[in-house]
Image (cartoon, rainbow, N blue to C red; front, side):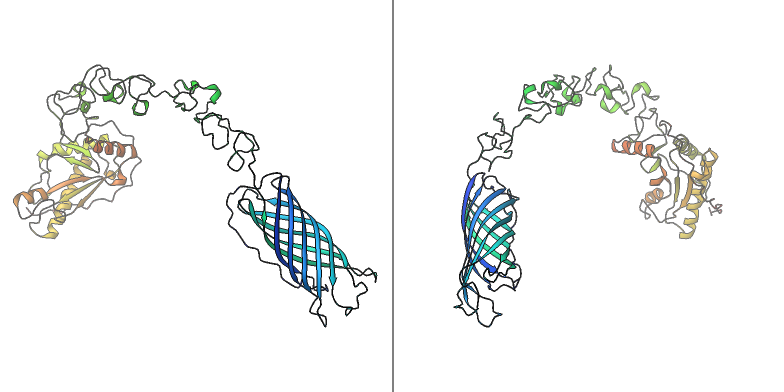
Length: 511
């Protein structure tokens, strides 16, 4: 063709009402004819009225008449002449994406092509009258409904076959035609499923709305209004969903209080067992506000802090397993695993806490005998808690004297404590001694009391040095204000830790 194909306007697709079935449309279009380079006729404007009938949403039959009243012959000949042409055609139009804002049209048709050139005999044509050719038509288009109107544009290729019958000659040409116009295409109030809702507002045009006063305006049937999996025809509560809690689930009705204790199931921790508000709906036989499942003495009232059992010394250790019922343990002790007797050492999160200092001879690394008891309790913890894979023994001093000597003294004292624990049967590979000298004070070195606080031994447990189950128990104890004691259940044997480097022999410190 002499001209390039036309660029169509693009529209954003969005849902809209589609043309109704069985409607008649009509429109007027204008555009241009682009002729073959070998054709005598030249490009020209087109005016095309059209009438169509749409038996379905997606298929239409159309008659149109393309008129070209002001054409000129091709410029390639010495002189141009006006011509008139017309193309009446019958077309079959397919419509794709008819439920979108913009539909795609596919057109195919046939018709006779008439043309008459007013050359006054200058072109020496054997047929100076009306010339007749046969035209086959095909091409795409776009249709955008605007209420009962529609904007439509198309590009059609036309294969014309014919010629000069007087000369017995013929020819075939491929022309192009673009048109744009407005047509009347009423949507009409159609109701395919006969449910009283027209298709343009009916979400289920092939399924009738059940009209049960539940979401009846969407046009779709609702066989299970409440969505509980029980069909409306089989349940007594169409619009109330069964709560599916394995309690009378077959009737389709919710049961907000299964056990009838006047505590709604959503707030009831024991929805199938009658209980009390104080125990979140769970049974409490002795009415001590500790649910039976958590009560170590379900038939004997006691405080929640002692697991529902009597506790004479109020140390949170139930009397029935308190070996010292009149002597309370430290407040930080985990009452779940304590024997109820005070200890000089107990485990906390990330450390072992000692209730008494470790005393040494002045200026030396010799442990005084009165500190053996507290170190024995530390050894008992390590013996029972195999899950502690590594314990750091940290030695600290005050700031009196030479810094280097203080560092040496703190290391020697940490080594001495480590050696004592090894002598109590603790694997050397689980221990590491480190002196910090005066670098980490906890008190004021300007006062006697502060210096006393700074001279200390601490036992810390690295984060990665505790077995998973033990770490969880310790953490739970800390969160509940109950820290592990030296008498917990035995933890599982942990994998052997790599052997720690041998600590250097402590040098003799000055008095």
